[in-house]
Amino acid sequence: MSLPNDPLPLIREKALWMRRRAFRMVFEAQLGHPGGDFSAIDVLATLYFGAMRHDPSRPDDPSRDRFIMSKGHATGAIYTALAAAGFFPEDWLDTYMRPRSLLNGHPNRNYLPGIETNTGPLGHGFPVAVGIAIAGQIDGAGFRTFVLTGDGELQEGSNWEAAMTAGHRRLAHLTLIVDRNRLQQGAGTEETNGLDPLDDKFRAFGWHVEEVDGHDHAALLKVLGSPVGDRTRPLCVIASTVKGKGVSFMENKASWHHGVPNAAQFDQAMKELA
Image (cartoon, rainbow, N blue to C red; front, side):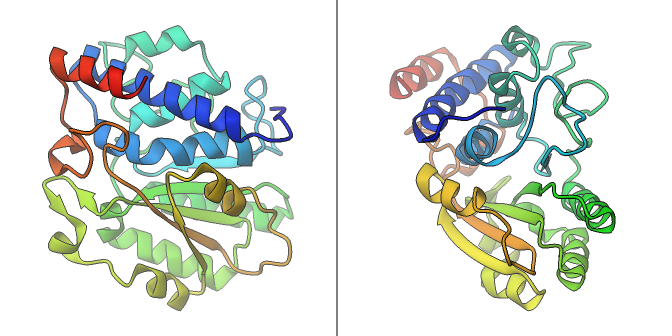
């Protein structure tokens, strides 16, 4: 995909469109996870419109960068990103969650171009991304592998096995992005099973760690778009985010993990996202 010399205006435009479109999808379906969609959308917009090498006309191009949506319940974010990038027609979004829709509650690689692996059960996507990165390392391939996890998802032990393996194998072409909104279904992450100090944990596993505002497109682009260069370790980007970012009544509310809006809330959100 060809990008402008300064992709930031495009990233901002796409992120706003993705928020509006994802919220409409959840409203019309009366199903979804809008809080986590909105914390992740700025990361996805930066990846697809500023950082990743991909070609929607050739979704299986061997040289493509890979993206794994490990927090697979946030389908409003990944589906709008793929549609905005041209992987499938925008009007497919109108079928979200309908019976026999290709856009079901968890992404399925057998249904949609651009989905690298099925995710949804938490703790699965990160290990798959490590496997993809190992394959690239063995082949001497130049592609990068990006994976986005939720912070609550990191309570699954499979993620730490994956982190240990990636650090041991020095998978420099692997980038993990943690959507650090500090909320999960029903409560805060630190109330449920504390993760802090998260940065030190990943450093202890042999990772290079960067912390960034997960809604600052310029800061995200600087860290995600930088070439691997001489880095010899996998990269963990801890993106500090706000659950429900952009809609006042959703922000920092655990109830919007899988909340759905009524008509009045939908209208208010569309005004705030104007």
